[in-house]
Length: 389
Image (spheres, one colour):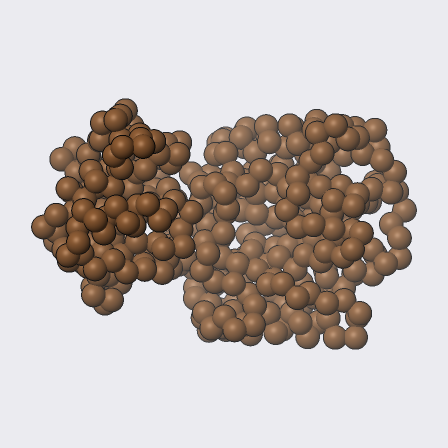
């Protein structure tokens, strides 16, 4: 009954890479709690991350140990490559209990498997109570910060992963086309959001999409002056609206994000100027990106394009993306900004996102790209312009 998107040999390769990094840092045990990292390392795919679940990777064990709610154990048997002996379900008495904590159960699995444990101290799914419970149950254990160890391994993709990202890109094109063809004066914003969401799931004629990690970001009017607002459920589009479209689709949870901007009516000169500057800067920056550049050097190339234009961009202009679950399709590793010394490597996928958010409106035109052997390749082909209806 197992239908995994990758062969077992690929999951074994990923686990070996993680173990190599663990061994290099003196880590004997790694507690993996991020659902995207779990999926990456063993294939687990369930909407069960509202309770404690995870993987324990030990240098002493060939395969990870999966733990989760007992009623989710069959999901682990169906969606992972792990042998049944490595799947541990805990009783429901642990679920959201005031009296016992799931880490008490997890501690029993860790005993005798190592003395140094790494966990994501800044991860979405790590809580202070988890940390303190493990300290109490395993007082001899030295607990250190994993510092997104799995995330950094995920940053460089193999060909099979890149293929899924490109498939997601074709779904994103369909979703963007849906938005641009539907938005009109008098149309309800909720109607566009519903149609775009449906298209993200419907996918293409030959394959479907997963629920993306981020809901369609489609603010209009003054709401476009902020980066992460979505639709207004009771509003209809009006003449002279700016509409931002930041859409991302997913294939086996591998994402392909894209941003564009639409104007209803005759665009004002200042908006058109912003559009011209951003699109010109985006194109010139992409032409100079390649392996060996540091992330901060890419941002510096972009910043050069703004000199003399009157436009400033104080926030980062891009980040690595790929396999992800809610709430973000970013990998929390490479950021295109001053001070980031990460070196771009063949196989990295970066969302170049030079969004501009001013006091009363915003403009977005982004490109997801793949770092190649000699340069970079756009993952999605879509017109770079201010769309006007």
